[in-house]
Image 1 (cartoon, rainbow, N blue to C red):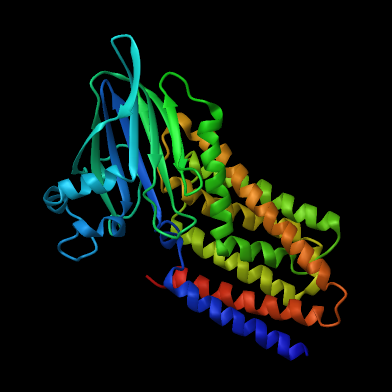
Image 2 (cartoon, rainbow, N blue to C red; image 1 turned 90 degrees about the horizontal axis):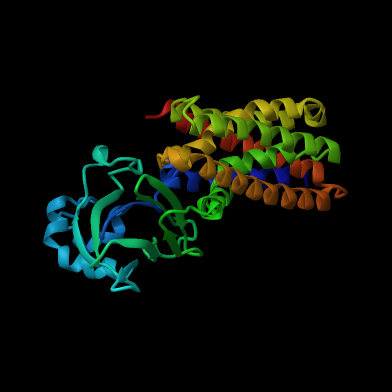
Length: 375
């Protein structure tokens, strides 16, 4: 029975490794991410839109996976019709004492080169296309209502970070398949609007961050008293919150390759310790968790750093994202503790825990080699 559980766990690890080979690092994590910088001034709103190139495949004549400026110009009319049906931008303005809200007249232009985009998204030019959408109204606008429906199909984690600038003010909105519309009234920025979208983004990041989840499961695999579990979870929360804040604020920066490699190493170490030391490792596990939690915080920060958040709203964005990470983390911890509690009195539970830990250590070791030793 013991050997069967160990071999089953190792086979599961092999399957997981095969899936991870296609997208082992943070790059794949943001393949469905889009970004929009909207600059409103007078009667015009200019949108610098960066989206996965596959969404605009009809404009790709060269079939090289990228959409160049000349291709955007050649398909300007078709792109305008396509985008007009998926991104609805309404402006509110006054005409003869009457408040009018209507869609702006849209024209499509090639986007600026990636380095020239102020506060650009940081998304990879090899996988994304950038173009400029210009909306105009008969008079100066007082508010914008945006309906965003341009997502990678059938991908629940798809999202678009929109930064709206007007007269020195900056608003942030995260559009997702569940949150597709937002209204921005110039002159005031509701706190909930700046934070709410980033809470969702944080939840999505932790729930689709398989390395972070695997680390959490390894920490909890041996069970322990409620006091021990609370100490472990608290240590991880405090540690990653500290480095997440420091990294996003550019106080501490480390190469992404180092951070991702260290995260893989943390998975290997904790899982191997489960096998090597058994329950004896629980005595000081909260200290180990705190140390590795600092590294995981740098990994969480990469999600926000990729977007190059405007400094004006960075505090609200950071708070929202961190709250979302904590919500997702708490969900994982609760489900894991409930499942392990069900297994606690089973005769085969020790073999199961050892098998899963061996498999997890294998996954961590392979990820470390992929991230640290391969180009």
